[in-house]
Length: 183
Image (cartoon, rainbow, N blue to C red; front, side, top):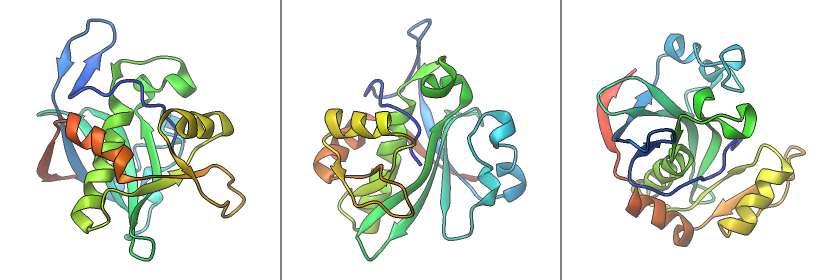
């Protein structure tokens, strides 16, 4: 489930109040005990510790910290040669869609860039797909990011795919680093 708009495509995160720019890193999250802190009660839509071992979870953090600004859960889909974005959301302090507030802009684009880069590394040519959380967000991606609609599965009519043509721009613009640390 994708729960955010792409507000800005900028190399790093930008503090919306001050305009200050912050560098970022991507950290792979594996420990269920750590992931379980991110749940509905703390504003993260779901319990992030619930995913099975076929799902990889990555956090977008401010460089040199574990200050998580967004989370993305992906699965590699060999049959369709694409990365399936299972869940992706910004941290509650960045979630304009749900909480009407935002500390940093650029988080959503970062999350798509991460999924797209993993798609390229896997040999899927940057293709990613997922499901929008609602109809308004679904139409946002169709109209503003040239998403292709996909057939409904499991009663979710808001499925879409982004081609490498669309995902290559975020990959080129964002300059996050991949951390060797895992939590």
